[in-house]
Length: 123
Image 1 (cartoon, rainbow, N blue to C red):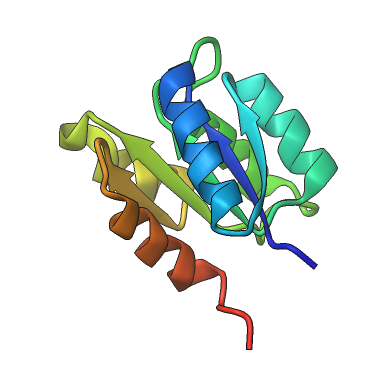
Image 2 (image 1 turned 90 degrees about the horizontal axis):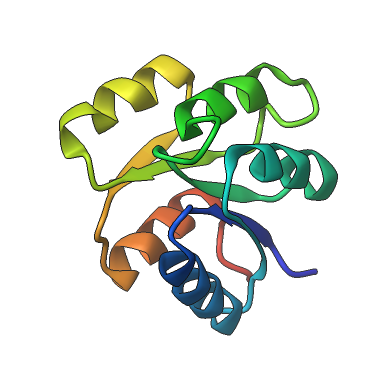
């Protein structure tokens, strides 16, 4: 069974390229452009990993992460916050209970290393 990744970013170009790459790597991928859609998809699909942009319209990514980490259905899903704002990224990630963070722009190898940390490779 394919491992599932939810990728959330309000910039459609980043979302499209990232989901395309992840699908080519063999993952089942779901994309969301805002926090509410991210919450809905996370609760419905129960992904194995979530990449979550901090600056989203409406609800910020760290708010979404905080909600998911308090929900018994989604609290065990690893969440990686992503942002180009490196000055507040580490503090935000610690405060909301996310599992990791990744600065934007990131290299494919950095994303892959992060995935390997949370989704073990198939035998």
